[in-house]
Image (cartoon, rainbow, N blue to C red; front, side, top):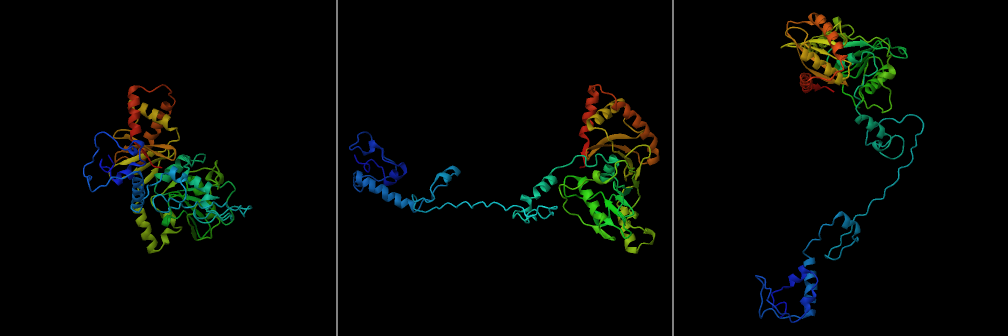
Length: 413
């Protein structure tokens, strides 16, 4: 019986591929493998092997014009020839663009200027800056320095002025002394128009601390701004810019042995040298800035302990230099002993984490001012020193108290 008589069409030959040996054998006995919907009978004439081969070739040409070529996998695309005629189309694979080696740098002497990441590198290599001398700068941007003020005098006060205190100033002492024409260098929490720094008409320099920075090293950003402010024209602010990855840090410019005592202000009058004789526009700007400042006082009995007043209650924020784990253990011991408060109506509510240091926070009654905090803070400092000296494991209650303190931590930076 022929294949047409068994109900096998021309399309079945195409779909099935090469004809099997048993299909070529004529005649074939056995039950018919008819498929529903296929015509059999007198209208389908029996065909021999040559007719079937010609039918397959014709069907192949027919479907090649209508069937899209299959998607090639990555491995198949690599091994396949550049031209595919099987499906009636020519698929020429895209040629890989040859990689040209960048020319050698032209500038060998002197520093390479900092430009945009996608701009040509100033060294003359022909590459983009981010792929040439900007690699180190990009790495410096992503690398975060956990304690940028470590090694400076008054590290805890640096952190407080950066994150907690609205209006304060502090005199800075340079290692190499003041340059000619610069009578003083003063650190300020913020400056008008969010300027990074300001060179006043008399040549003095104001360096802002609470500004956004371009890299992960706050100390390097501030040092770069300070160096540019020292050479700026008097009466002009210093704009922000990208910092070189190999630039100096504050620890390289400031005297580590010099005294660092911040002066907390009730407002921002330090912006203007002669605030009493300022114009009406300047006074109006100062009034708006002063209205947003939270009243803050630095305690005299403890370093970096700042009392602040809010509408609902007052707070004490105390930046401490101790390691975080050791400090939390000591606070947990004091909490279980009932000596973690600063008096009646006060409560240790949690802590901040800022620039690698821990800042415990107490809630205070509204009637408790900064002066009333001086004596309780001094007494607490003694209790904390004793708790820090204990090295025995925590008890169950102390571990639970420590877990509560950990859950009430807020990271500021």
